[in-house]
Length: 104
Image (cartoon, rainbow, N blue to C red; front, side, top):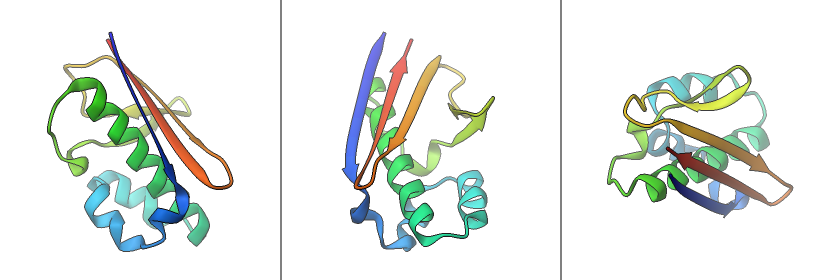
C-alpha cells in the first residue's frame, strides 16, 4: 500500500486556462458545467492536488491529462486506474485545496 498527498493554495489556480493542461476530456466536461469562477478555481486546485497525490503514490510519470477523476457514488474515483485499486479524497477550505490518494 502506498499513500500520496498534496496541498495547494487555491489562489494559484485563478488562471482558468490551466484547465486545458490539467484536466482530462471528461473532467473538462464537468468543468464547463460549473457556473462560478470561484468554484472552477477550487475544482482545478482540487484536481491538481488529487493527481499530484496519485503520482506521488504510484511513482509513475504519467501526464495529468491521462488521469481522469470522476465521481462514483458521490466519491472521487480514478476512472482509468485498471491496474490500481485507489481511494481518493479531495478537500477545500477557504484558501487551500488538498488531495490524498491511497493505492493498494
